[in-house]
Length: 231
Image 1 (tube, rainbow, N blue to C red):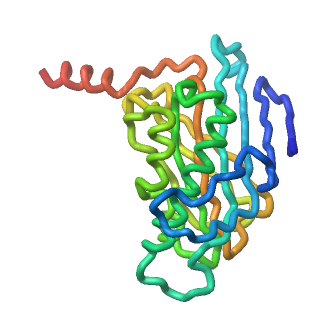
Image 2 (cartoon, rainbow, N blue to C red):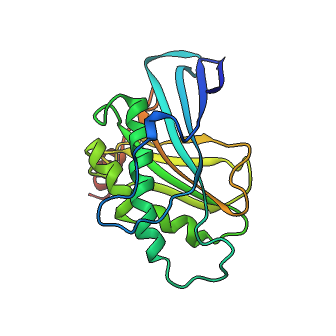
């Protein structure tokens, strides 16, 4: 179902809400070797944005930004302070990584097409920041995405607490080169009814292309200039 699709100053934005019974995420059960704990996902949201004009000038190559976010019940909600988070991390993080990676590849067409990438988590107001961190700061989550896109760089991230319609900000960097500033980008969108106090929003983001008209160089250029000045 298409939530909206508008054209504004050369930017097309589209958001899709998918029912969990739809075929693109069927069959993504627990990863082999992990505990068979139920992943309670209420909805999967896909966001797509394409920029054709930047600074009043047509982009030589349109920039495509997109993200996929799962809205799920916080497995630690209502249990007081839980000391050991590992059982839920080991059981649920692989399922989330597999589900969201599959959706990102569906939008991109292939892992090779993805250039910039990142991740984010938001915990509802009844949860801890540690809960948001727990499900994305583990190789059980991130390795699904890294392997699918053939990445070498680390996954940049945000993790915070918020309520419904809280901005989901996913910082990106180039999957092969952390110093390539053209791909320092942010995917940002929100879900009007999430997260509820007892929910989490877990998201992946990506770009196809870098900033239109990027012209500030990269980190390596700075290093050369600084070395030259110090010589």
